[in-house]
Amino acid sequence: MAQAEGPARPGTAPGQPSVFKLVLLGSGSVGKSSLALRYVRNDFKSILPTVGCAFFTKVVNVGAASLKLEIWDTAGQEKYHSICHLYFRGANAALLVYDITKKESFYQAQRWLKDLENEFHPGEVVVMLVGNKTDLAEERQVTFQEGKEFAEGKRLLFMEASARLNHHVAELFGTVARELLQREEREAAAQPRDARVTLNQRPVRQAKCCAR
Image (cartoon, rainbow, N blue to C red; front, top):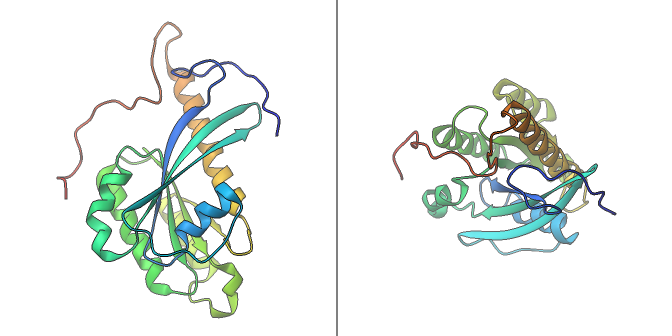
């Protein structure tokens, strides 16, 4: 897709996209790596469980603007839960992924949300709840309405997807990308014209909880 040149955003060199950190959170085997691989490389294959964290990047065009997503795919196994907090600190966005065929993974996504709420101030990060594996709808344990109602109650974005079928994968990342750009534009508009502020450099702040 051809990229139209637009005005440089604060803190971004002319012609360079803004950089945002996005983390994938959720229990093991819900398809976090599959979603990332499908989105970045348009590929799907059996993947071994992530150890620690995997890293992907992708430049996304949204109209005349563009941004670079740094996608951090965290391990879902319980033994890695504590160290995953190190990866999502400083994030601009998060995908909370669960498997629609496993109710427990839906509860685990809610646990990850609590971890985010302990780490960030309300509204500080863009959060989307993602129900993956819609290709296995006949085995569904979490209804669309359950996911939607939980997301609405917590003011999260929500979408169901299938990494295997490439259903709604680009759409969910694109929705997050648009929200990130809109937030950046609102922040820029709120700044005095003569203020030299680097929007992508988040202010130094005290953590809301002790390091784990």
